[in-house]
Image (cartoon, rainbow, N blue to C red; front, side):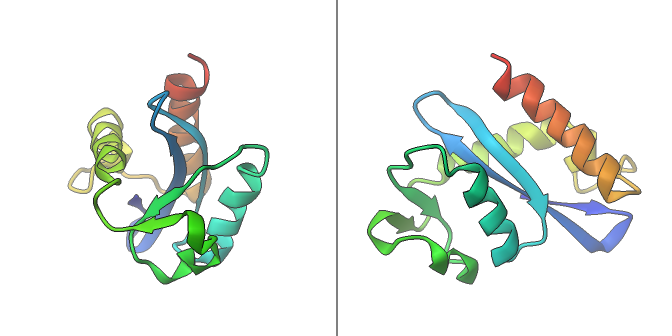
Length: 122
């Protein structure tokens, strides 16, 4: 999911892994929408046994193993719902608001702290 830092030209992407049985985010990272940020997320997930990946058809996902990778919208509905929940709870993620972040560091810290409090500490 993306949001803005400073202005519309500076998109900041939140990448996270969703665990459907627990209905929680299990890890997250911030960055651009590219392979390097995906590799950062995969490094955080190295201790988990991931059964399969459900993603859209973005080219960066070609680094995922084909036998575990499912593309399309069939299994991403819950992820989109979580994106909506985050946008409703955090003003910084809402696209049409005056409450945007002016620095990437504060953006990442505020959203990261919220995710940690809501998903990791339960």
